Length: 79
Ligand SMILES: [Zn+2]
Image (cartoon, helix red, strand yellow):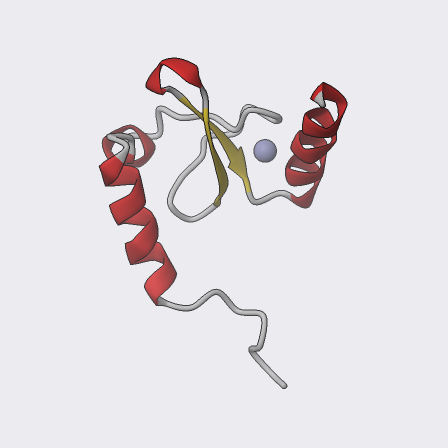
């Protein structure tokens, strides 16, 4: 089936709402948030993970498979 793995069009709107609810939408749109792993600027186009930290801050991971994998690996180590 073609297109089965595509992200639904509604996703970006949901993402915006989510980012707005945590007060990070503006920072993302301004390019002020960097991927925790590769330090690339995270945007609405390439954001993959949003990880809540203490003190109401968030870590962001871009959509590079390497970064997602790296982050998951580090998380495993912490357990
Ligand atoms: Zn990255």
